Amino acid sequence: MVANIRFSLAGIRSALAIMKRSELFFSFIQVPVDYLMIVLAALSAFLIRNVPEVLSLKPKLYTFHFHIYLEIVLAVAPIFILIYAMEGLYDIRVTRKFWKEMVRIFSATSIGLVLIIVAIFLQREWFSSRFVILAAWGLATLYVVIARYLIQLIQKWLLRSRGIGVHRVLLIGHNGKMDFIAKSIRRDRSLGYKIVDQVNSASLKVVKSVKQDKGIDEIILCEPSLTEDEQEKLIDYCAIHNVKYKYIPTSRETTRYDIGVFNGEPLIEVKNTPLDGWGRIAKRFLDVVAATLGIVVTSPIMLATALAIKLDSDGPVIYRNERIGDDGRKFFVYKFRYFKNEYCISKDNPDLKKALELENKLIEKQSVRKGPLYKIKNDPRKTRVGAIIEKYSIDELPQFFNVLFGSMSIVGPRPHQKREVEKYMEYHRRLLTIRPGITGMAQISGRSDLDFEKEYRLDLYYIENWSIWLDFQILFKTFGVLFRKRRNS
Image (cartoon, rainbow, N blue to C red):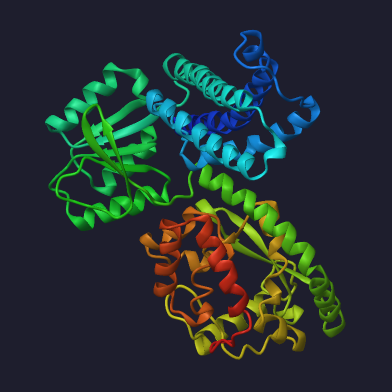
């Protein structure tokens, strides 16, 4: 019986994962399809460039080699993709309104046309056929619309016939508005929802029970009697467990939300982080680029550090420290060893028991941090080289490989040890909703000199307000912080 329950829960989790992967796949595939349609439109315009001459509208006054034209098209097409992305044309939900998408396609393609016209005005020798430019604009709009319509037809067919992309939703509240939403979902499968339950109570105990038994992808709430404290706990729970939280507004407001309309009813979705869908893909791409660049640039420093550690003390150069990452996954953080080998907290250490006993004594006597984390001031376990590399965070450089392998990000909350995470309050677990980072808001605002609650609030701000620009700001400020002496080192 227990085995059957476990099997069914595993099936639910697997189904939820497939739903999200299917949406992400179709959103991702739109990029190469859009690129292909834009190139195809440009080639079509080139092929029909003699139409004005055939219709005696205007003689052809130029000759242009195809291979040069193709090079220009292949270089210009990515600009259109960037404009499409900025116009929000890569939404992952299958239930998006297609007519709105058509308007955005027309708008984005027109912006691209204006940029091309400006470029040709400034550099006229590049190209001079107005017909080809206007034909390519019209055909690009048409081709992209048709391709996206076909993709959405496939998505909706999979949604209706196979249930791929359906979101399991828990409805909280029994009233006229919620009953109307429930009836609409049951009547129209193309809305993309399946109701797993409808309950009166918004207590965490009830929500946890439904999630455990049936699986939840989203929550829609319409319960005016819910207190601010109960709502905050529910929002934290949803963020920690990757459940979308939406509510039908009464008198409440939030600074982190997306506003939509569900069959005529206003619907607000509380956003845990912008790091969802394409935000996650963009951040991962930048992580790989930055980590590769970081490894190349700092390789001389890393080689010199490795040699200094080897000459200074016995033991391995790299110390693998187990930490807790996103979704509570365990992984090893790579660091240059700055302790004497016999004091390292590692399973490879034959004197691990003694090392742990010493560390616990030092934490009790010399830790200068409050909360779940500890920081030992004047740590006697450091080697001579270790004291220097730890002071300037050189010991963290091997974590570029953590980023490259996908267990960490360049920017994010710092990963903590299991024994530290076990001391978290429930709301602290929101730090585990994104990949941990080498640097972050806390590191540029005081590093280990901060108490844990201040560090948590800074990292939570980052989670809720992430952007590429914010990552760049943190990276630039990190360089200055590295050479600033810490009080608690």
